[in-house]
Image (cartoon, rainbow, N blue to C red):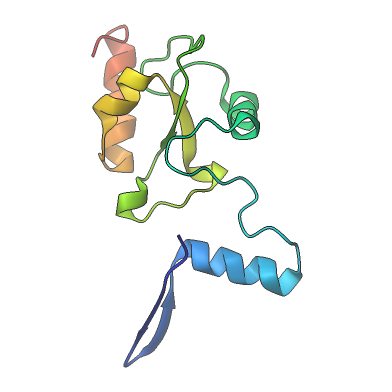
Length: 120
């Protein structure tokens, strides 16, 4: 969600608000090239992520096979955007275990899970 804060020192734009302004200024049309609401499986988004990252779970490294969820590296609750650059694919159980961890904590969790063979 794009947010613009106004205060005594002027305006502060978050990354999504800046991106939206740049798109509008360039008249490129869509404000969010690939947007996902919640953890909805958007086929185009999933296919783009598979092309970019492969078809394995970000956290445990095992094949996704039909158990696919879209996860935010930086949670929306922590200011992360709904943009493909902030999205990854994970098993539902791995996604749930990650919860609202920070991006660094999610990467550490992935490294730990992969080193232990994917055991939660």
